[in-house]
Image (cartoon, rainbow, N blue to C red; front, top):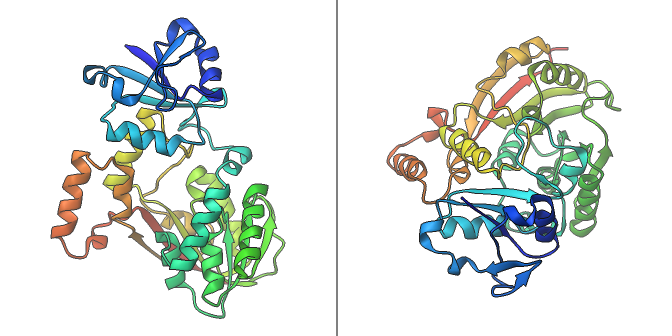
Length: 333
């Protein structure tokens, strides 16, 4: 098996040093094709023989351009590749991402994307759902606000919004979004595991979308219990273990070394956890069945089959194939 490094720039040189010259056959770099870098030849994607594609193990050497690189590899029908950056192979499925790793995801591109979504009203599935669940004039808290898209969208639609995240970069990003859009969001840089500085039942709705799945059951119950004090209604949105497209796509990305989200534990239900945390009137359903397809390569046979099935079937959400499991409940106190 031949090993290549995608990208002959600074990150590629670092990868070459770590792997050793004797273990790397060549670089792939469309901008430096024909060069020799540190004694290693550089080819373009188009120069790679078709018969190598299933036997070539490619290390993508830059997180910055990872999505573009992976797209090129898939379009050119490459099978085996791993993501290499910052001295390690990313995609660990056993450990949660660190504060710093989450922070790296909040950048200028993220800022531009959120602003574009706000201007066009083209929101992700969790933002669309929380807009349906909440109402104008309600006080809403988002725990783990990440890019801030949901919080900004809620503010735009007349909710009084607070948002917290433990990543400084996340809070800085949301602050810039507030400045540029004029939508008001009260921000807090706080660890969701700690005691939150809010009054009892201060919020009509408290929600998290994409946080609880990174923790084990005991920790999830502990957080839900702490959060109950400050809300009238709790909403959780996490990956749905019943979603075939999401589960299969996640496994493919993990096996290919391109899974970017660290430890992520999908759940088929959080009913018992909400009950143990003291909530009542608990409801569950799934959303985003078509969004789940995005986890699979466009030309993958399973994606093609599920997409065709969805096109021929009514009420696809009723089959529980949504990407996200939504759990809603009330604070009885």
